[in-house]
Length: 328
Image (tube, rainbow, N blue to C red; front, top):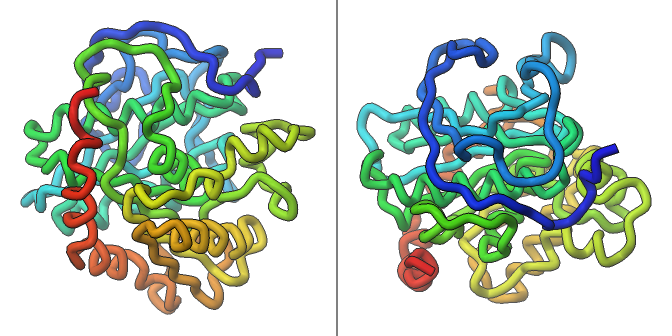
């Protein structure tokens, strides 16, 4: 079996990459859309997949994507850009990516409001990749967007990351551990910071420790019987600090998959450290609610995010951390 639990032992010096259009041998989705490859040739990390990508056709996995061999971003360009960008990570326990229910609807919503959106199709440990590859892909995505910001009409200090469930874990880790060297690289994209200027976590998996040790995220990233060191290394609250990018967290009090304690724990740690953080806990909604239904109170969360974003906290924090986005 491939050692996909190995932590952060990565290879490969990389150079250039290209862009593709859907329809070039990749799975068909609802519409054709510009896509940006993250890596030229074979991506870094141990392992790999066999066979074509898989699109969920029924049940909880309807419209989800798995068996990803070519990590990439799907681009949503707004008619009138507001200068901000968001890299969006769907959830799915690191064994699939919920596109139809999570990342694609919010990508369209944000695009309609002037955000340039990059929907991340990241590699999955369950497909045969090492556990660290999703985090490589997320860091690389942030660096590509920042390097190409002018091309998309983006302010390089207004680039955030958003994630749902396991995608919230991925987004949170990228926000809190952007300086962690996950792979070897020396091309143009590696000369800028992977640090998001803000992060948005929805019903996120935060802790891999007890009593929150029942998630699929935990099993895929650190296995069934990890030691305390691994649990701490991959729990987001471990890295809460004053210099964390501004973060807003949305969760439901009745979530049985990622109980509310996940979001509460991270918020409390960030707040105690002096970071800019907000937590919005909805009474009900369960897990995996995406945009939510119109009759649900939690369906207000996208507008709440925009108000938070427009409040000036992002710009202020970005200026305070201006050096973080400079060439290393």
